[in-house]
Length: 468
Ligand SMILES: Cc1cc2nc3c(=O)[nH]c(=O)nc-3n(C[C@H](O)[C@H](O)[C@H](O)COP(=O)(O)OP(=O)(O)OC[C@H]3O[C@@H](n4cnc5c(N)ncnc54)[C@H](O)[C@@H]3O)c2cc1C
Image 1 (cartoon, rainbow, N blue to C red):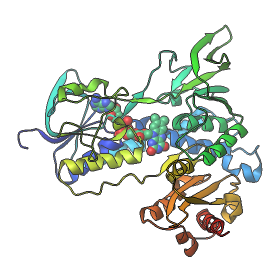
Image 2 (image 1 turned 180 degrees about the vertical axis):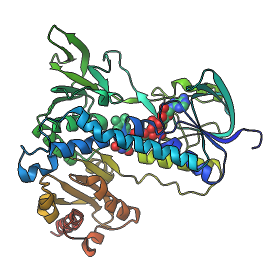
Image 3 (image 1 turned 90 degrees about the vertical axis):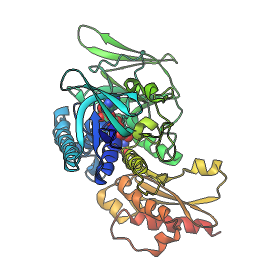
């Protein structure tokens, strides 16, 4: 190992790279993080997860959304909400998270260099320096590729960052538009569509699939779809975009989206959220003996090791599930394997959190998957409005669904839409992780009044369905 300058070089400082670096540093390895961006923390902290989720909180607060069930739709904390109002909350949170990341790396003795890394060979990285001119070469025993993703650019969509945005630059809007077309009904598209709709922006959401979020339980997606329509979102599902044009006239500039069906949608701004590609273009992986797929992603084994023994890859660059939490865990596990630390490799039981308004979260399989796999299951449901806490917080639309095996009564999944879904799901996740049964929720006592009570109500409902 002494022949290399570092025990580990990590390319990228997002959740995967950050956690790989900290894990290796904890066992006193010499670690270098190479980050090409201006800030640490990756897409997660600078332009993705943290800004969008903070903006969502600002939207919920200022629009008075959570209080509408109690004080009526006209209730607002601020009448005319500006983008500055929203960013007022976003900016300090982002700055704080960047600082925490930097401090953690510093505290653990990790060297950080601002440069774009690429392979010279499996143990040698060329760094194109960002804060100074020129290049530097560094050698490492092990390498973790944690370069994440970048926006997939479609030539038919002129993403100019002023009228047509990607999710990377949507928060640089100078003011809130009156109308917005969102192209792509995946997680990011749905999240932004629902946030802008809650602010009163007229949103049109387009997706070529017949339903939004196909990996989410159909009943939950139906509830979300209903809520989006309630917020005056126009859904164009099963429709493909033919072209997006910037239309200029003497009065203003707007965006015209033409669908293959011939429909035209004119809005002030557009957001293209049509997917992301592995950020591997500049990596020169071929020099290390590696290849990427057509979406720029790397293939790894169960230990996050690539086809070249000393090179690992973690986070969004390896594809599914492309979540911040799973990326962190993959980075940590990659470093564990690289340096022979015993670890448990079972991250398949992870929850999904979708921060639409209302929010969605689930763990385990959907009804559609279980049906396809021929698993005999039963469901149990609770509506927030049946629960005292649901009434207190004024959430009349939330619901929780348990899915359990009809014979063994093993819990199989939990699906939630509504206030607190992304937190509530962890109760179900713990029971699933312990291989618990639906009966657990009947036999236990929850705080009262809480939304967690939904688990008990849903469990009673499910067990009642077993009795003829
Ligand atoms: C709008 C949006 C909202 C999201 N919301 C959520 C959410 O609510 N919950 C959730 O779990 N996930 C969310 N995600 C996904 C989440 O951000 C990612 O799963 C996570 O950031 C992936 O972490 P990563 O470490 O793999 O990569 P990234 O966070 O993308 O970090 C990669 C880093 O590598 C750097 N890099 C790239 N190439 C090089 C190179 N050659 N040399 C040096 N450095 C390089 C980049 O500059 C970047 O800093 C969201 C994503 C977006 C875009």
